[in-house]
Image 1 (cartoon, rainbow, N blue to C red):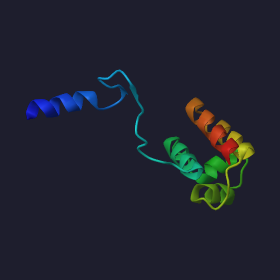
Image 2: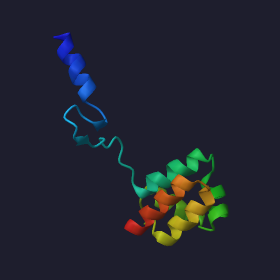
Image 3: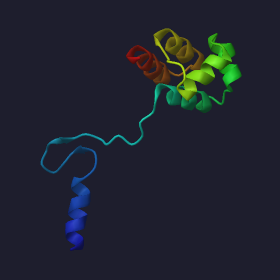
Length: 100
């Protein structure tokens, strides 16, 4: 019985399964655009006030975006992406802004 479990464990996971077919990764966490902004800001160890100064977006607007009361939008996403100075975040924030 342990052998069956070991075999099953090796065929599960990411990439190609034993059958040679692609197995997509599971979505682990779904983030809203506001969550993405908050996480990126916190990773940069910035306060909302510091991000407001760096992006030119008022702090109450950043608070509203993070809490989901205001939409991100492409223009705001680009300003925030530039202020957060990170290529992966830049791309994801800009894309999130275009979707809304």
